[in-house]
Length: 461
View 1 (cartoon, rainbow, N blue to C red):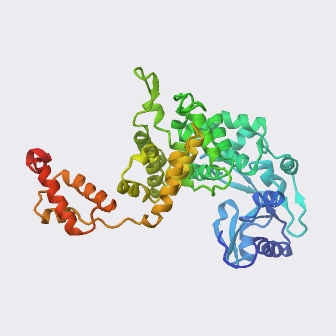
View 2 (view 1 turned 90 degrees about the horizontal axis):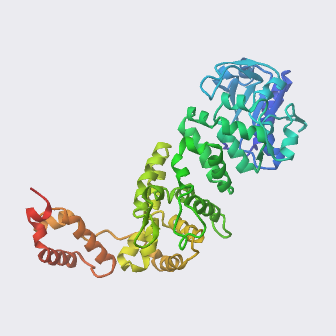
View 3 (view 1 turned 60 degrees about the vertical axis):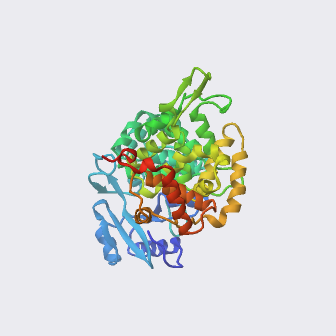
C-alpha cells in the first residue's frame, strides 16, 4: 500500500466501506488495523472485509485490481492509497504451509475463525466504531495475551510463518503467549523450514529492530525456531569464557546483555546492521575455543576472522542484501581491532576510522565492553580521535598506484601490495605530500629490499 495524499488511511477506507454498504453489502474493518487502533498505535494499513463477492467489488470499483480474486481479495485505490478489500471466507486445505489451495465465501463469524490470533480476529464497524468480536479478542487484548484462534497446532500447520509472527507480536506489542499456544510453537517449530527464507528474515528483522529484541532472540532460541535458520547461535550457550575478562558468564549471556545495551539512554535507535553485528559478533568463538595449559586460561585465537566468514555465510543463507552482508561481516571481523587502537600509527588509525560503518562499530565496541569487563578506555580514546579526525573521514587518493611503480622501472610482483600500502600509510601520517616524494620513497624501499624484485624473491617462476 502506498500513501501519496493528505487523505488519512481511515477516511479512504470509510469511503470504500460507505459505497459497499450503500450497495447493500455488509462491511467491516478487519484484523491488525482494529488491534492497533484499540492499542492506540499508528496505522500502517486498513484491511476491509465484506460480504460482496470479488466480481461485485469490481463492479463498484472498476479501477480495482483483481490480483487476489482467487482468494477473494481485490485491491482498491483511493487517491493514491491502496486497500485490500476481501470477501468473508473460509479457507480450504493448506498444503504448502503458507496459503490455502482454495477458499469458500462465507460469513463474518466463519471468517474470524480462519484467522491466526484472537487479537487479530476482531472487526470494527466503519461508521460507529463498534467492535464485532466472535473470538474473544477484546479480552485478550485487554490482558495482553496472544492466543491462537481454535486449535493452535492447526493454525501453525496451515500457515507456518505464524510461528515467527507469534514471537514478533509478543516482542513488538508486549503480549504474553498463552501456554497452549506457546507449547504448539515449541512442538511445531520445525514447520518453519517450509517457509521461504526471505519471509523468515523479514520477521526476524522486525524482532531485532524492536526495543525488546533480547526477549525475542531468547524466545526464538527457547522454542526451537532459531535452530531452523541460525543454529550456529545456539552453540554460544555453554561456551565458557575467561572470568577475568567476562565475569558475566558464557558467550550467549554476553551477547544477550549486549542486545540490552543497545537500549541505553542517549543512544540512537540502532540500525539493522548494528543489531545483526551484535548478535553475530562472537559467532566464531565456539569453533576457536581452546584451553591454554601454559597460561591456564581460555582463548579464542582468530575468532573475529572466523566469525567474519561465518557471519557472511549465515547472512547469505538468509538471503540478506549484499550491502547488509558486507557491513555486518566487516564489523564482526574488525571488532577485536579496538584492542590495539592505541598502538596504531596515525595513518593506520585514520584508515581504521574511515570505514563507512565506523559509528556502528563504535557502538558495538561500547556494548561489548559494558557487557563484559566494563572498561571503556579504548572507547573514550576513539571518541576523542573521532572528533579530531572528523574532517578526514574521506581519505585522500593514494599518491601512487601499481602502474606508477612499473613506469618508474620496478618489476611487478607480490611485494607491490605491501609497498603501496606502506607508502599510503606514510602519506596518511603526513610524511609524504607529493608524488615525487612518494616515488623517491618507493625507489629507496626497493633498493633496501631489492632481493624481493627477483624471480626468486617475488614468487614468480
